[in-house]
Image (cartoon, rainbow, N blue to C red; front, top):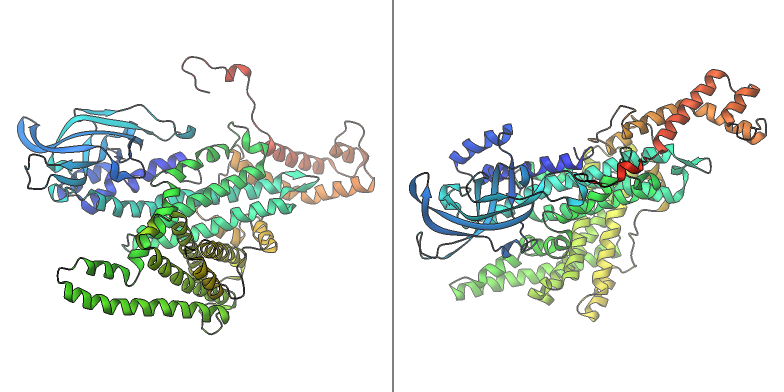
Length: 623
């Protein structure tokens, strides 16, 4: 859907990621699920979820929205419930929603439920026709058409059974949000980023074949090939990571760290692909109108960078910050022992854990040095002759990452959280190793086919190159400069080896985007991409033009040869096709074939223009 319409993808995304349905499936009472899920599935209810407010964006825990436990009148009876006051904004589907999911902080100042006053973040489902609920006007997010807007409530009373999961889930909203958000961030936004990469692969690869400069297609220029390679290579790499993570979700995992990796890297790479596509299209991409199939994608790209956790936050705080303690084999256990009541027993267990931790760190350092000195040839690796080298390179980097992460945590402790750039670079290493792992698994699952070699090699060189560069930057900015220098000798005893895709490899990947429809490599790259068939559709017109130009190619070559040899000398203002027809180089039918193909090319190249009156502002009219 994202390859056809970002607005459509956004509209479908909310009910299927961080929407009331997802929360109900995991935490709703049986009565809530039986009532709401069929209505949401049929479209009788339109959901939204209100989390972000004017004073609480990425720091959702700072929300000032409140729910006070109290007694109130509900349908003519005194009922124990919550009196809510909130102000939210940026709520997708909000302007048309009939069912509002709401996050707020619950308080019990009168101790109607117990001794505790601050009950924590809680989640409720509120029909939007409930008295006191106000649905505001629409936001206009960078000109996108999907519904988005503010809402607020003033002294809205709801019974406790409006809480998602009922009263037992009161105060557990943050846990509920994080679990459901990790699922949504693993599926929806990565799909949008991947959709952008696939779509730009389709249209840019075709446009670069149709559009010519200096009598050669744009795709023949090395500068264009670089852009095409990054679009196509990213599309395959992103799709590999998307599929691997979606499979994990299907198996019941709630991959919070992986969801942060995908949210950041796939939306950023999607934006990169759109930028390269705009560069290749030039003026075609910047003139808005019905024939511009890129402009809205360019405008809307920052939306997905911003929503569900701003990318700057995801990279600097979440990816490594969340994963460092959760994934470490000893740190979480060591922290748990610090809170143990039996201090003597805790100390004994801590000493044993600490010895294991030290052994783990020494083992990682030794593995890093041995693997780097031996170039990984001391170990066996799965796969074929192509993938084995990449498996070994990934193993080397994994050992080095484990060592650097462990030492960073030991040296800095809690200070590491405030050293955001160091944390971000550690997260970059982890992220690019995961992307490389996804590419390796996909290539292996496909049976290591030869025709996928260019895309696979590009994905691996790209991921390993970025990972190694991040490690280089970590060492260059390590808190202890002396130790950083010693570690560099361990991690890079022969200098950096992964430099990213070569110019030759870029050219191979760029060539894939220009292949004919039906080519197995191209079809694997574009799998799931919507491809209009009508020549009247701006995107369909690209394929239509390629079909006609391919058919007319022998005639075009014949015409160019005659022009170069001087056999054809068009008169002033005379088209070369007409001159060729006049002297008999082309027959009438051949000339018409060329004219039809050139007309299709021109249709693709042309841009929109408007009458002055169409662009004049008037009451009720938006330009």
